[in-house]
Image (cartoon, rainbow, N blue to C red; front, side, top):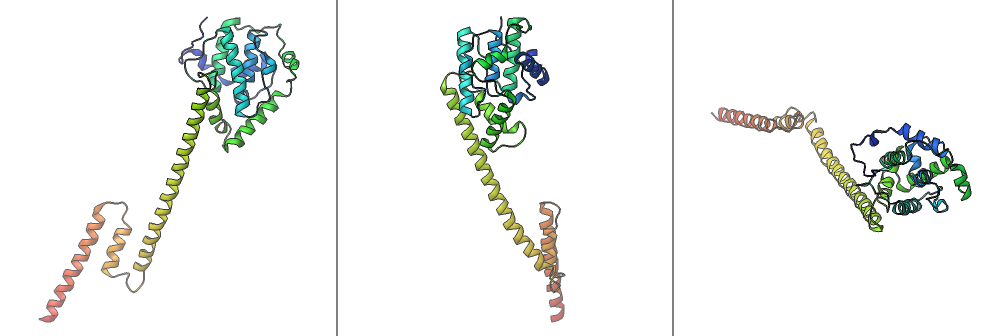
Length: 270
């Protein structure tokens, strides 16, 4: 059977609802969002359903709330994949893509027919993990959300999922996790630097705007508002864009004023 599924394969066009229906019906769960299956526990039991007893379910943590605990689940999954000689994906996959890949693989093993002899609830009960999975998943997501100070439904999970998809199951050993963590730190530093740059630019903008506003106020003073110099300055201030024509017009206006003034002085002397 083929385990190397290309990215244009129809497997990756299976919708979220179909994936959720497959998970809920097969494992007797009540998940409402794909993100609730981000910890790796669901993936472990899906493989256990496809190969009954192949996964040491006592090692699977259905209450995983931290990145570390979730990575341990994926390590269990990696060990099972090695034992069953299942090829890894040819690139890191996000949570939805991996579930799509996993559904295609499981369907290729069992022909798309659920194992009626497999009791997912009993398998969870045997290791004392049959708590309300939906509630535990929601709590896990909330913990991740707070840990990253992220916002939005799925946005708060993006960095964590990106980290999880770099773990042993998708990468080669611990170096993959370290590389992913390093990448997250580098991106966080880049965001911080960009925010500082924006703050400095905003302060500089406000500084020069205040100066221009002060110049405008002076030019609007009744005693000087009709003076050619003030009028020339306002031509520049009120120009619709940064074209040089505004500056040229202002300079020409001042030149004409000076020439007229000199002409009047010569006439007075005569």
